[in-house]
Each structure stands twice: as C-alpha cells, then as structure tokens.
Length: 399
Image (cartoon, rainbow, N blue to C red; front, side, top):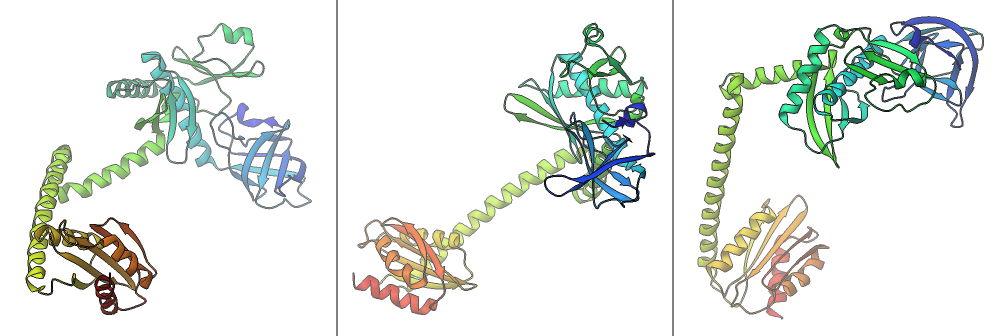
C-alpha cells in the first residue's frame, strides 16, 4: 500500500514520488501505482481527488486489492520513473469543507435531538445526510443550523487521531465504528467524536457558513440537503440575484415578496376562472350559431376547422348536444398534417357515435375511442378535411 500523504498533511498540493507500476485494468483503463500519494481515493462518502501526474490528468482514484490506483487520461511515458503529482486544490478543499460541515451538522442534530445520521452523500452542488427520524420540524433545522455555525465561528480545532479499539471505547463516539483496526478518529473536542477516513480542515472556521437548503422524506427517514463554505456563498449569491431581479417586477421589497407572490397567484387564479367562463360563454354562442344554420336534420351537423385543439372540439361538441338533445355533431380540425375528430350525440338522438368514429378512423390511419354518445380520435391528413367530411355523411346515412 502506498504511503498516504493526505493523512500526514491534508494541505499538501504537490508532491514528488516514484512510479511503482503502471498497468491496465480488465476494461483496458490505465492506472498508476505510486510509492506514496497525496491523492485521496473515494471512500466514506467523500469523492476522489483529481489533478495530474507529470501533466497527465488523473480522472479517478480508488483503493482496491491493497493498492491505490490512479486512473489516467492516458499512460505515462515509459521513462517516467519519477513522478510529480499535483492535486486539484479547489476540488479537494471544497470536499474538506463539505465533509467537515457534515460532521458538525450531524453532531448538532445528534447532540440537540438525538437524531442519528445514517448516511452521507457529498454531491457536486449540495450534500445530504439522512437522519433516523420521520419528523423534522422547522425549529429542529433552525436550532441545528444555529449550533453548527456557532461551532464554526468559535474556530475550534479539528483533530485526527489513530487509536486502538480500547482507546476508542473510552471516548463518546457519535456512532459505532465500522472497522476494528486502523481506527482513525476525527475529533472536535467537547463536541464531536467520530470514526472517519476523510480529509478535513484543521479548524472549524475554515468550513465557512453551513446552510441547510431543504429536506425531503426518504422512506422512514428525513434527507437534509446542505452546503458549506464557497458552496454556501454560491447558493446565497444566486438566490440574492434572483431576489434583486424579482423585487422591481413584483414592486415589493424582499421582505414583502411572499405576500406579493401570493397576491399575484390569487389574481392569476381569478383571471383564469374568468377566462374559462368567458370561453364557455363563447362556446355556447358558437354552438347555438352552428345549430341555427343546420337545417338538414337527417344529417349530422359537421364543421371544419384549422388549428383547433381536441379540447376545444370536445367542449364545442358537448355544448351542441346539450343545447339540442336530438342533435348529432361531427367536428374536424386539421393541423400540421394531423386530423382531429370529435363526434357527439344528444341523449335522444338515434345512432351510435362510437360506431361512426370507428368507420372514419381507418381513412386517416387513426386511433380513438369513446362510447355511443361521445367519441374522439385522430390520425394523419392522408385525405382532406372536406373529403373526410363527405365520408362521415356517407357512413352515417348508410347505417
């Protein structure tokens, strides 16, 4: 196993070492084995480090089969016995901030409410912890967040310590250890004692602000999303800019935006209702107008349209047969090479509308359905709407 320099100095950004071996895995990907490394391999919820080895990009780092594999974008030169490694420091320090923030936030929920953290995920933009509780109130979040940021501002030491099982047993560990040897603890004295193999800053102040971003129920647990440090600033900055843009649009200061939005939504709902009522009124006028012009009661009332939606045709068809219960209506609309058909029949009119539609749909390679009083469908405009209208009348009269 390579010597793990990230445990000796988590701030080490460059290092020189020897190439022990370079080979391909079963998928053909090249990886390098080094005598020592500052690259952290993925584990314990913390992602792997990236960077370069002699200028070649390191795209993944895993610890397996007793070795740390540095997966490379391409193989190193055969003459590369000596290797210079460079860590992507921005990525590493971000991971250190988020991981330490998780310890602090998890300890806050545990210390205040005995809500245990059962899993942790460090994502690209935000991280999550799953708490062993099915209830998490706003006061829980507020108090845990407040305590967490107080610990940050107190600039406490974050210590790491290798201990024996007996030494670990004498400490107030937040959760049971997952290993029985090579036990490494991350400790914030008088606050949190936890087994962990990840990298963390030396002090809590370096974690920066910790902000809970949201919660969601996850089976019998609650998932808490959070961000810390630069990520928390980025979230705040984006939201602040959104608020600054919304304030003049809503004609309200930020503290009154909620009431302004609620008022806007209420107005929108009222306007939508008024619009629907107006459309219904117009549909009724249109239905009566069509009925007044339809004089041949032996034939269905038919009407052709361009660009009319199936929903509008349905409402018009229902309005027609509601207005005149012995009427039959067939409405056809052609749009962008497609044909929509709605057939409606009043409750005292003769015939079966579903059978009529079934006879029409094959003419347009269409599909549809309904019942004897109301049916709809659509297909391709392989024949014109006018020709389809004539076919409708033929089928109805020949029934």
